[in-house]
Length: 74
Image 1 (cartoon, rainbow, N blue to C red):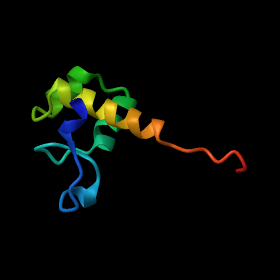
Image 2 (cartoon, helix red, strand yellow; image 1 turned 90 degrees about the vertical axis):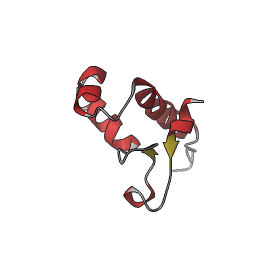
Image 3 (cartoon, rainbow, N blue to C red; image 1 turned 90 degrees about the horizontal axis):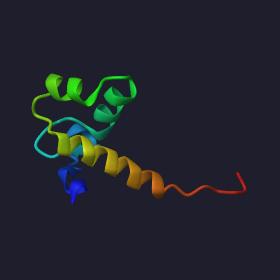
Image 4 (cartoon, rainbow, N blue to C red; image 1 turned 60 degrees about the horizontal axis):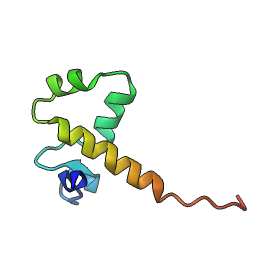
């Protein structure tokens, strides 16, 4: 499963979700993509990342988004 590439370790980046074997957080990867950096540029800038890591970050964020509960009274 792609999400297995994402780990949460309190000793790495204050427990933020990171790509296994790196110090890159899911937020870092998504932030670069959201700012307009292409996946090819991201992978060239951070050679420790693989295409599967980018997909895992997207899958992790999508799963988190699905779990958001909206309070209709708010």
